[in-house]
Length: 309
Image 1 (cartoon, rainbow, N blue to C red):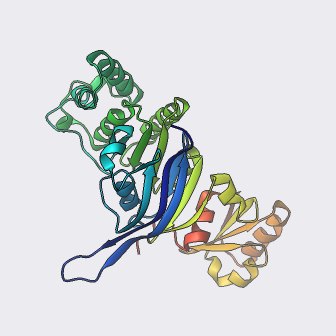
Image 2: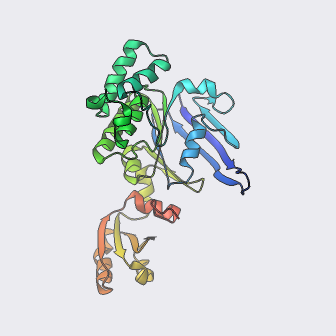
Image 3: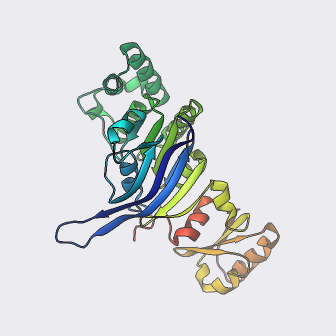
């Protein structure tokens, strides 16, 4: 296997609920992922991330379009693709009557691993996820974050060539999230390819080598996190609370994006003091920081990633 791990071309999905108008969940999504890459599909809840991941991982048929995994047609012959992939579904849960150790080991055995390999990989994955101390507790007794770590451990233990992770760190505390990130980095060092969906901006920026921004079923932007930030045209962000009242003046300093009551102005360091003085004269609080992926997302989508409207 070489080249692209995943190629999707003009993937569309229309849901046709009974007694209701059709809903287009995906509107011609096209992307490619090279082998060994970590790629994030970044978007708000309901943007179409999960629908695409389910189609790419052979769990859902598209209305139209093409998906290839390592050159194999994932739509026409999903059975030829499944040995090469593993999936962490969104808010998936381990079997409650199994312990984390039993969950991972049984899954590996079902995929054809020998007893010895399954045992070794189970112990390694549980340790990476910080689950060794609870490895023999029934999953029903675990917290939501621990159950999510069990699901991630089960899938990373496969070291499958292509892993799909749908919101893999949802419900986890910051320390657990970082353990997951490091484990996923280790997998790509070994040659695996990762596609994860997330609505966490820091996760997309820190973990992913390439980011696709999706909204309302359409891909709106793609690039590295750094490329997306550079597209804003400046290096510093000045956030002015209540800045809409002086929006025309703020716009003279650089690109602006609105986020609720705040206006973020992307500008050069040489103009920051002048901009802060403007905010002070208007009696509006302002803060300064580096341009982040949040500003790029706001510019592309027009709304905050937490905006559910």
